[in-house]
Length: 218
Length: 261
Image (spheres, rainbow over the protein chains, first blue to last red):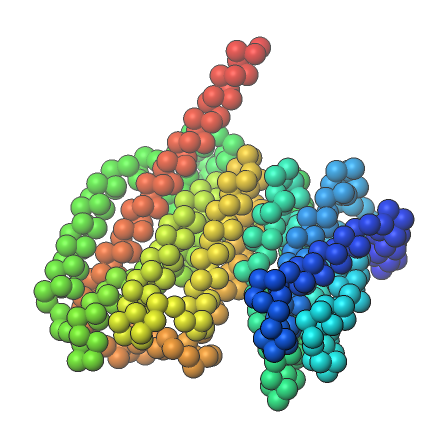
C-alpha cells in the first residue's frame, strides 16, 4: 500500500514539476469542443442540444490521445524494468499509475468544462449533469487505457495503436455517459451503469495491464 | 518432449508418449497431416457450396412478405454465425497461448483474425443489402448492428497489433491478452437482440428449436456447413503459410549468423 502511495505521489510530483502536459491537454479539450460550432454552424438551439455529446466527445478524444504517456517515460528511462522486480506487486503499481493518470488528465478536463459549457450555451443544470457523468465515467476510460498503453509500450511506432484498440471497448462509456445527461427520468439508471462500468474496469484492468507488461518484456 | 523452439524437429520418444492431441498439434506433424487434407476438404467445400447455392436459388420458397430477398439470408446468417464463431476460435487460441504456451495456438490466432474480420464485414454488408429492401434502410444504429460493427473494429485492432510487432512470439502473448479483453463484446452481440428491442429480429435458430420452416432450414444448414468448411480450409492454408513464413524467417537468420561468423 505504501508503495502504491509512493508511486502515486511520485507521478503527481513529476507532472507538477515538469508541467505543461495538463495545460496542453486542456487546450486540446477546449479547442476540440470549440471547433464544433464551426463545423455545424453557430446555431444556439442546435448547439445547446448537442453540447453534452460534444463535451463527451472532446473529453473522450483528449483522454485517448494522451494514453501513450502512461508508461512511455518509464519505459524509456528503464523505470518500468525496476517496477517489474519491485517488492510492490506490478498490479498495485499499475493501479497507482492509473490513479495518477486520472488525476492528471480527467480532473483538468472537469475543471475546464465550464468554459466549454459557456461556449456551447449550456444550462447550468445540464452542465452539472455532464460534469457528474464525466466524473463517474472517466475512470473507466483511464482504466481501459492502461491496457492499451501496456500492450503497446514496447512498440516504437505504437502511438496511434492504443487508441484504436481501446476505442471499441470505450464505446459503452460514451453511450451511458451521454444517456445519463439526456433524459432526466432515465438518468439515474444510466449514471449507475456508468459507475458500474468504472468500478469493474478500475478493479480488473490493472491485472490485465500488469500481465501485458510482464509478458511483453520476456 | 515438445520443443517449441524447434518446430521442425519431431520428437516421439517411447518413454513419454504424448497424447493424440499433442501429436496432432505439433507444428511438424501439423504440416505433415494438413497437407493431404487440403485437397479433399476443398472438394467437399466446393460441393457443399454448389448444393447450398442450388437450394438457395432454385429449391427454396420465396418469403410471403419479403419475396425473393429472403434468399440473402442463406449468405447473411452463415457469415454472421462465423463472425462470432471465429472469435471463439481466437479466444481458445489465446488461452492456449497464455496457459500452455502452445506454438500452434498463436499461429491459429494470427491466421484466424483476418478471416474473422472478413466474415464480419460480409455479415454487415449482406445485412445492409438485405435491410435496404425489407427495412427501407442500409444502416440503423440498432443493438445487433452496432455491436457487430464494434466487433469488426476489434478484429481490425487485433490485426493492426499483430502487424506492429516484429517479434511474433512476443506479439502472440500481447495479442492474446487483447483478444481475451475484446471477447467482452461477444455476449453483447449474441444477446443484443434480446436486451434491446430494436430493428434486428431475435434469433430464429435456438437450441430449443427452429422457427424456420424445414424447406428454408435445409438450405440454410447446407450453406452454414459450406461456410464453416470454407473457414476451416482457409484457416489451415493460412496456418501452413504462417508456419512456413516463420521457418523461412529463422532459416534466413541462421544463414545471416553463419555468414557473419
